[in-house]
Length: 129
Length: 129
Image 1 (spheres, one colour):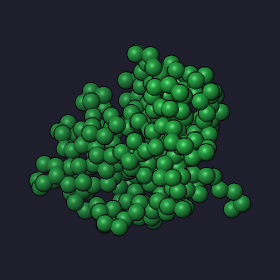
Image 2 (cartoon, one colour):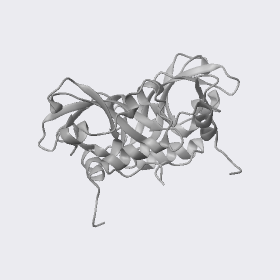
Image 3 (cartoon, chains in turn blue, brown):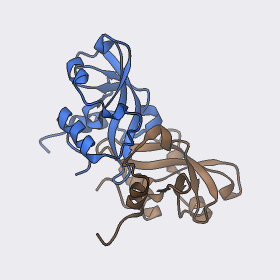
Image 4 (cartoon, chains in turn orange, yellow):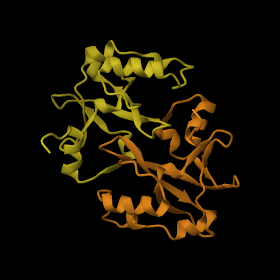
């Protein structure tokens, strides 16, 4: 029991194992310094595994431009009970350079290769393994 | 490749691997005969694994009484593209006899033993293993 993940620590602190999807939607996102930088719009759920795959999030002043939606791996967010929101180590430059294929009008969330590309970009553990 | 799960078949049919949480919320639920019996209110997500654990669903005329909310294992629902909703083999009698601990005012979704009780009742594979 030497190591605990940050997610585990959060769950232990709040004592709540499960969280409501409609409560996650709209929850604020904070950067490493604790500044509010965005909010969760929705979760993208992998049908086969029942796992939360991605988060669609709106990032605003963070980028110095108008609010814009980005899709990021779910595990780039860590719930922080002291903030009542998610913390992320994502920075504006990473966000600007990130894949945006999901913005295509006909993108059907059906392309595992593109999900791989997204997770590789963010250095996130894939949910489908 | 001899066997496919029903969830897999659904995903193949629609070609969509991921689904939006706010699209699942409000989606109709049909019984084995294809009658609309309820709808999804929200998903309960396991913080540690990022898995969808339970579905909070409203079942109405199905029970011959007013609409009421029940918490059921997520894997008791199967998406059926031909219906544009979820299919379930749950029947009214099962629902009437099912655990209702989650209705307690102070229930904090923090009790794995009660989750086990719920999954055992429904004969559903636990998401935490």
